Image (cartoon, rainbow, N blue to C red; front, side, top):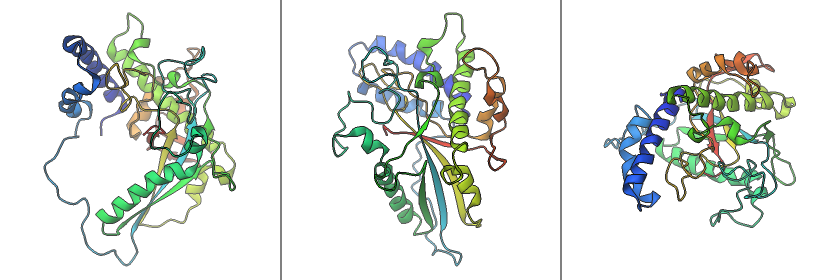
Length: 316
């Protein structure tokens, strides 16, 4: 599994190359560059390839006596400090999609979203539940009933409206994902990749820390820790954040978030990624309070250490 530092380094080098390609191809539209990006997948994500082996993911044996394997996904809703009240307004950062809050990208036509109240829709668990329903149906079919996925939403939704009040971060989205356009003239790509990796991991640690400060019933880590232990029951944490991902949001300027380069770079967080926090600084240049998480997110409420997180944007 490639680390976030290696991903950011290779992505930044690839983006530099793509800028040269863009000037060469001239009038080619962004979609026309997709055929160029496909061969770069092994470069961006070592170990990922397009296999011709179509064997099933799971054996088709019947479910054992102990029942199916159950994966509980603890979803943590999180949004950023708002960039104002209007997309395109004086406070809106052009480097990000929307305003850093759920459903704030009013400039986009969401033809697949029912209703007109976009913020309420994106904060209603029924929106994400449809994504999980697809995953549940797929793995149930592919595993012959041997795998069950159960989503858990945090903070818990309002029992009457179904809406969630997300975890609120202290800074704008841009602070957690600086782009090449933000680097200084004298910075090397490798040095900037380190800064970018530290910023992304600060997003992970700050989100987890704020979730851990919730009341026990609203704290995903405490709830997960108190669950009955079982050899065929597994747990995972998913950071579901406002906005889009630079990996899927391109626009008229090209792929890989060229329109909005400060959208988060979503990835699967592993233990080695936390090492980037060992030398991280805060916004004022002093030591970051999240340096303590350099070996993993230390959960104060349970004294456990979490070393893996998934990330997913609302604009999936």
